[in-house]
Image 1 (cartoon, rainbow over the protein chains, first blue to last red):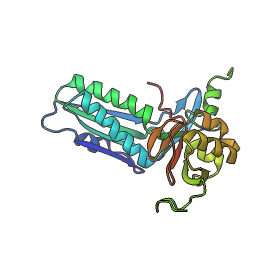
Image 2: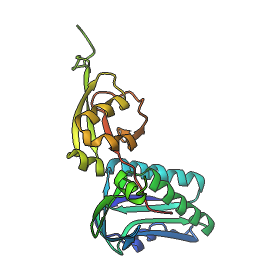
Image 3: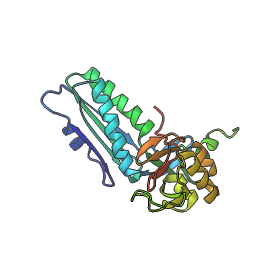
Image 4: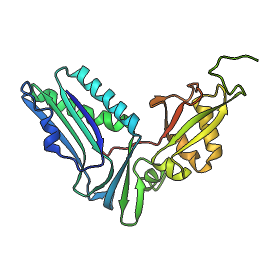
Length: 147
Length: 96
């Protein structure tokens, strides 16, 4: 099975993982992306996620199909939260069910790498003395003042 | 002059929809707009036109990916009337 969603509601990792816990699967691997309280020396107040939703859903489906072609017997659930996500809250749940753990771990890691490469979701970090869009020119400059 | 019925703007100009996100949206001050471009313009030419109209977008447009009708597109892709052209600033998903 495949379950893909974007939501502004708080995520329920247990409920999402339950979707891939089917009788054929001996292994379920769940990744939680959690808002950290610090990044690159900045004290983070919260993150805010924005998405090109129609395209993000399309790219998420593509990425899941890629993983299913590489590891044939997978069940996958991916849910990304949009809007404000406070410290300690979950922004992303990626759950993979497979007969055995080697494939479940590998597929979950693969999905995350690909999601972060291709899915149009941006995060804005709000910290003590301002805010920055992660990935932007401003962000790159603050990271490397010599540039 | 006859043309096929789909060509109601036979003036050498076509209109594409522009969608702006994240930092591009902030810099331009709008999330959506229409852009008039020459009839057989490609993505790169539309981007140049967009940079003229919104100078604060110039730097971002150099680094951004582009999508046409919700699929990633190269700058040499030729556009059609009413295509949806989205500016996709670099996404960064955290360290591995």
